[in-house]
Length: 371
Image (cartoon, rainbow, N blue to C red; front, top):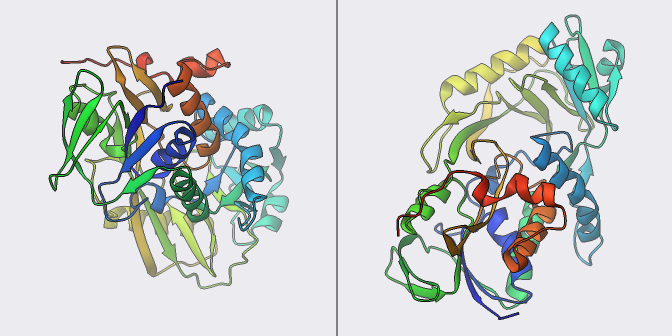
């Protein structure tokens, strides 16, 4: 195989994980717009591993990643990347109960619980009006920082280069490959450009003369509040099946989200005070936590393709442009398998699992090349 020079745009979990795989047999340079890596989506992740979360391709990629998380955790000096947490899903109306019942039937690890059993797992939960509860013991916390740092270090160890403060400003298509220029005037040339820019994915595609994939950046708010009653660190993450709230213990406090998905422009998003107030109201309504004040809050970006599955592969009209975007809110939990699948598609254009390849293929979505 010819050893190509690959320019990756984006230093979140997508860029560093794929870059570490490609650096085995390619010359990789990764350009990150910010002054440090993983600032936006990766650095603001809820850090949960849930095999039943997301559309079918995401669930399959997450399930396959479990063994790779275990393998990486066994490496010297690597902490355990997955820690026990457990996931307690609740349904409060008939449509929610039907959806949760179907999920329990489809997920072998999940079991139905009585209200008393749910209360035993999380004594702060008010269960008088709960219609159905389901528990998934395979839900775990992810050490996002350790995972991201491992991939960045591996990329460098394999000869790759990471450049921060390098915001892509212009590209020129060469006879073979690309000439790219950053906002500060620096330039690089490469055979293939990998678009791993997350919420900025369609903007990067536009700089390459491509209409992109209809990516939609969505704001997700996270709040940490100290409750009036003690919180046990062993409580599971508790969520509404309709995804209108979730909460979990966090260092003696409560981390929670209203499950918002407000469409926003790419950028350094901030939480909307209305969403902060909303999650306090919702969690207080279903618990005895008596949350009143906010210790801290933040917002992150979750960027989806129209069908909410990842977008991976070369463009049909532009083989020197490779997409690795649209990872939504699932990028960290499926990173180990998606990076390997992305590298295989980059090298060969195919996957042994044809159904999975079709589900994540870049050309499944409308895209228009202008050059």
